[in-house]
Length: 140
Image 1 (cartoon, rainbow, N blue to C red):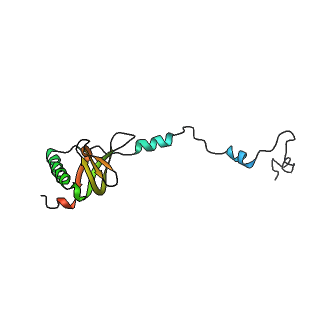
Image 2 (cartoon, one colour; image 1 turned 45 degrees about the horizontal axis):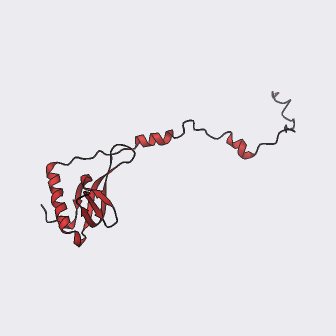
Image 3 (cartoon, helix red, strand yellow; image 1 turned 180 degrees about the horizontal axis):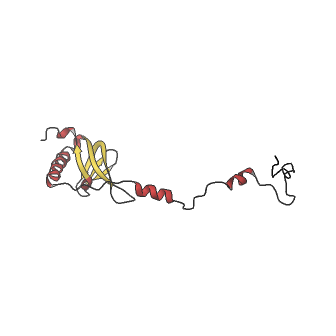
């Protein structure tokens, strides 16, 4: 059986006399994948990332927080341990996430309406969902 390439199969490989040979890295680069839409994958991932909406507290929950904050204001000198669940806004899109910060109370700033922990973390009182501490175990 005759192969259609029998006439050229045994010819020597052609090497140009006027042009230098391309390096292996440059040859490989010709076949590298190409992303026509640079940044598109990152934009899709950012859009797909979920955020939570901020919960608006009812009057009774606000009253409970006010009682806890007034107790903490009186006990700042004792540096009580706290677990503060609060809303952290997302910097890139609407919404955010609820996180719990655990630490020792440093101060409560009534003027700026923030809770400051010993770690330096500042939590806006408007963003607080709940405060837990051993101080509140006797509250009903």
